[in-house]
Image (tube, rainbow, N blue to C red; front, top):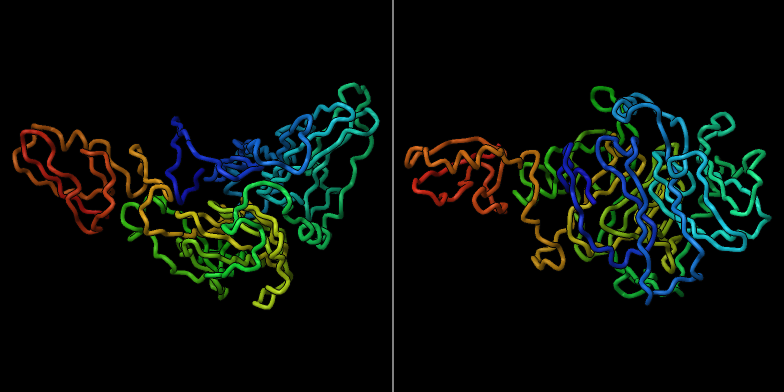
Length: 478
């Protein structure tokens, strides 16, 4: 729904109502808070987008569906945890399913159930961070209780047993509880097993679901690429020796004014410099900055995500689903494209990047806006591994991008001082008095409309109020 680059935060004691159209994004999703490390404190949950009756799915309707959210739990307050993230890696106290341990999933023998599995933890397990999968489970075993286990990748759980998430598949007519050792999964350090599994997941081209490709198919062999981003996620230290995470050596600097709002007010002038940083190279010289890159509207963007770390990473792109076309070790080169799967690649918005490796995706940029591209690993994201992709369409057709609502909230340098309204409208002010005021605002207090065109140096922020006296306010933007 929003990140700090597109929305003002929901201030304490207030609430927002979101109205949006789900359109063709059938599947399993989840929501969570996106600022100030709040995700580590909870506030997440599942969202199901079901297929319309006229769109078939490649399996019979299951008896029931379960949402299974795999998450981590910390005994420490998320605010304190945010400071600790800067100093060292923090291991969660527990891995939980749906916030409990163990969570019970009731079933009837002979019936088939759909599990919608989402990984909302801050580090990776084989359903990678930020991803969701649906699996079908048929209760065709002897009536009893059976363990469901989630184990983390790249972690020795024999020494850290608290990091094993446990659920129970309970047969309703059973009194036999689950006992014995927990079942073991694949070797958590066998990266190649995970890579092979990822490559084996392909799109079912025989189903009747909506096709995100404008040509009406998931076959992307004949598309023409208009851009290529090569983005390297790394760990670094800033000038003060504080650990941070970067994209092409840039640690993202959060702004107090959302970039989308800055675009509306001043076309971004004074807030960020478009295409200031490279989208295809890194020099090893870390620096801070507001990283905003241009994306060609209705062009095909190839994004190569490189992982310089020795642990798993996940990347997420807001506003789009992309085609995961390739995985590889070491450095990516143009010759790596020969190994892409362009026939039936899986479509998602979050993909894993293996240690010391790269992942390539194709995105069709048909959705104008300011879109966050980030590491979905909470620590990396919180400490700077993100950027924004600005996709601009000069056509003002509201069917493509709806105009801002009349009740648009302002914040940061675009915040309106509430006292200005009564100050300007007061009839007690002397006739023809001119005031020079420095304010962080671009707003028409009379019509309640945002002024789209403004001069950063000075402008008449208000027309003459409809009162007996002639008062004008000259305002200067800081």
